[in-house]
Length: 314
View 1 (cartoon, one colour):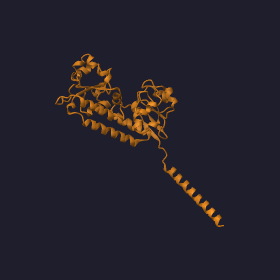
View 2 (tube, helix red, strand yellow):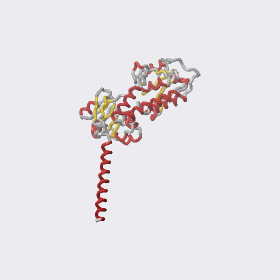
View 3 (cartoon, rainbow, N blue to C red):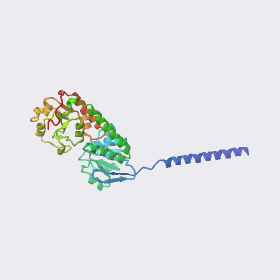
View 4 (cartoon, one colour):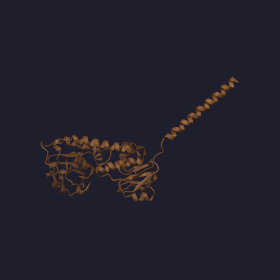
């Protein structure tokens, strides 16, 4: 009988332990909150909703790709535009085209929960007609960048990380601005985006960085963020500094009248390599790095002993 009792007690103990373990597991499962619904209003003022944060994402702007990855969710990307090359992990993803020639068929084949793209994209209507949710965002000014980071963070269900990312960018921009050479402050600057020439105006995110550096942009806010200019406009503005892609820098003295521009005459030209131009042209997480690239160039230029009067070159 004593042996039978031991077996019965052992079985009861095992049963109690199993019951306790199951209750503990159920408690953990119940303690884990269910994914929260997601809702975001994009730059078209169109609202998109999901029962939980989307897991399969296609991005059609490099800055949006970089933002998703910087917020820790690169693994959710299933495809990007062909210009998205950073971070290195996204180079292996399927490429669905460029900014103006993205393939709707290639996007549909990736079965995305959402497509993040520019508000001016030509395929928005086509995608929505096929039942694919899109979030259209257009980061052009610095406030735009802050807003877009916040909206991407909301889509990902990572609002707190979005706020932290923007604070980090602001800190990096302030640190770069504080190190600008005294001789550069108050000088006029022309930032060429493209040799057409398209320029970065005062209202662009690049213009905001230049203003933070104490430089005077020769392209006023009234002309828009990235206006196409008549080359004579730049000659008349006579900027003290020119920032340009290295592929265009060599041609500056050959442009009609440009030999007389102060920046060309005094060799105060910041010529950025292709990989640096990518950093500078993307309104997203690497804006602090972009500011450091500008700063490094300004620190390497020769400046007169006294700063120019504010507005010089206008």
